[in-house]
Figure 1 (cartoon, rainbow, N blue to C red):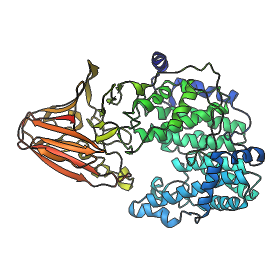
Figure 2: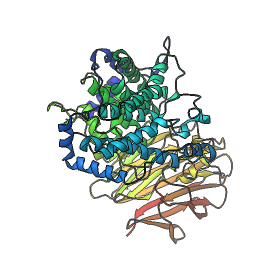
Figure 3: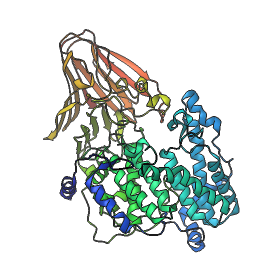
Length: 627
């Protein structure tokens, strides 16, 4: 079945450019999406569609759900919220980002307010308890009173908050979707004037601006054609709101068809092999909203429009299994959290759309990610065929577009690893060309430390002052005291990436990442031997002048030196023994990188520095499993 997967990929691959139209936004030139969008007017259901939950008025259905374990769980969650004051994001919190760059406090309060809306709305439908109705109405009124639905971090100059501009961002688009679904679900059971104002504001803040951007009546927000998760997330939110709320069929049809054409832009953010440059967390978030969007459109067109027909949509789905090393652990490349895991719910939706699995039609309850009980896959015929063998079961996954290899243990093996080439000009980039991760028995021993807590610095010119985002926080060389640079021209060329006779070899030239004309070549070799198990990482340079040189190891625990040329790392009851050799005498420089990590994980760096400058540096580290 793997052959069928790649056959579909190669047969459908298209060169994507940008095509201007007479008026309105520029749509991507993507023949596959054009064909899908062309089907919308004739296949979109005439009535509004807002997911698989029933309206509040269908009391028999909701009372039946209340008796299920999930229903009881949702009622208990709502009770906990009622025991707390209603969180209201104030103007003072909103303006904090513009004052000091902190975005966490406002976002936390706002997120909790959204949680009150979705969780309490479900409890109201499940029980009819007036306490939930009162809390729901209060939460909705808090959003209606808010000057802005976008995040402060996305409101340059606070222009939306001041009423000087209207724009759509990730959270306002998704909020519009959630509120539209809530409105359609509880209409008739809440204050009618409240619902009327809610619908008006959803249109004013989300639907109308998008429709005007499509028509060329308003300057387009940058995310409409962005090659990042923004495109998929915002389009999913706008489309969900339109399907639930837009009663004018022609307007709804134009909105959905335009979104189908535009979502091709987000697929340009993946490699042709499906590699997600933004990392696993953003695969869950970005590609997850590609799937949500695709599933909405599929259901709203009775299965006539399936975005999984697009080859990159199909290839990006493969990434979910192929990026996993062992035990579900993934490398924290780019802005990925250390505890990120691939969402199995998303994988089931992917399989459903790809025709490799049938849905059972049962409600899927999602807190926070989706409005209430939406998007349950329908049952497909039993003749559905598997699209591909699980790529996560192979010993090696290789992503040429990102220069990334993922190695899993073979029978009886204990080592797993991931290596990254690529460039330092990627979405949510870290300066990490040549980074790698080493695990023993599903326990990280040497790692990529992942993302930092987002602040104003994170997405500014000062981004790489962070010890987690610069190459200082990655196991890569430092040449003449200089770290890797960022931006174009940093692509490294993978010379070798193959496994033969139980030995995997990955070799690349890191020179472009440093942009120093004195560096003729800087080769990194990564070797994993499976029988017996051993990993070797060797850095070898050729310079036009004698330059200082060092490389580094990055670990979640402190290094312990046991001999002049040997160090150990202990983590989770496992021990990694590291033997160091070099072209000349060297010194070891231990440092703890102290940055604000979402997981509070401590990060230790061991610099291995040659004592004398040289024209031909070489440092080799050998990794063995200790006792």
